[in-house]
Image (cartoon, rainbow, N blue to C red; front, side, top):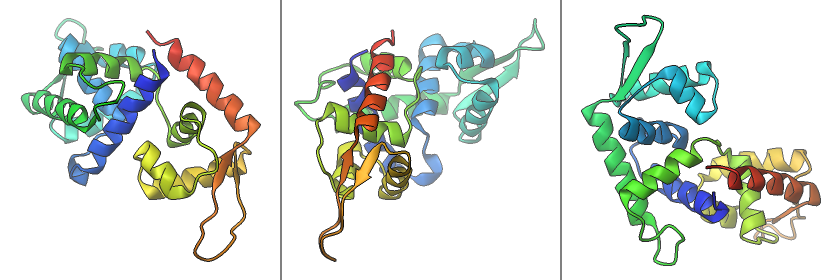
Length: 215
């Protein structure tokens, strides 16, 4: 999968999520499950976990949240009582369509995903859902792919569309791990910038290879 498509999709989804009522928000990985079920109609919880390369407990947590929102219906398979079949409710189908259209509306004319149909966006989302992206990884990828240099917090926020508190906590972790370096604070009005280290760039390149291997 093309790295720029992967990042563009996450960035667009982050913007849509920020503008959604907090009580109705889903994370990207949950949206990927919704997209998967919009195509496959019915899958067992185990099949979804396998598709997304996640553990069954993680799948249980995500399905529970989607169920609480009224988006997911889970019921015991009539032939195999050990199997839990999952499908989207009408509300879940409508929400998938709505989120997908909002992602499309968010894309700029020069964006690599601009011009794609809802079906194509859903297909790319299903692909991307196989490799979860943490805030830390998103920031490192932004530095590596967009050739960021020494950037203040707000530039990183704008580049990723992650919430500022999320970015701030990620920067602390990345600096502690030696993947980013925090610059010196020159004055009270000038916030320090963050620069990616060789170790951070190496970590980003490994993740890029994993993304490019997605099919």
